[in-house]
Amino acid sequence: MLASVGAGAFVAGKIGPGHGGSPPASGSTTSPAGATSPVMPPSASTQLPGAAAMATLGSYLAWSASVRPTIQAAINGVQQCSESPASGEATLQHAIDTRQDILNALPALSVSGLPSGTQLVGTLTTTMQDSIAADKDYLSWMKDVASSGSSCRSDPSQDPHYAAAVNVSGAASTAKDAFVAIWEPMAPRYGQRVYSSTGF
Image (cartoon, rainbow, N blue to C red):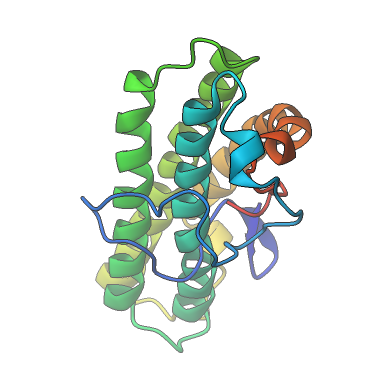
């Protein structure tokens, strides 16, 4: 989970697809953040039951991974005075929008035929919910910094929104660990990448 100068938090990477866009296509030649293993050839993986659902989940993970690093960078930047709160807020809002789009799409995903499909969707849903909650708390902290006129180098843990973000990040980490425990052994067989719990 993310740790902005001394504290952990679930956050995002380089700006990826914009809010309202489609997740990256599964099988992209670009290796998303946190990817750690090779994948099976599409000809073999697409024959397995639930392959379409796995491909969709893989695209959601790549989408989330694309925004993860930017969140930590924004938190650090605002705290260290190298980024304005307004810029940090824009980054956090983009991550929130991206993750909310994933969360909104998950209930419609059909996992019939996919082993452990219900558990995968359930743990990823919890992960997105907790991550969004943490992102929103960090966003509120940045707004507090902007409105209070306090030094950007002041102790962020004294802000209740920042403290809440760190706490919710712990819950998100637990959900991510549960998701990865199911996803990791399945992903290579379906031609999908394996992610660490800090990769998306």
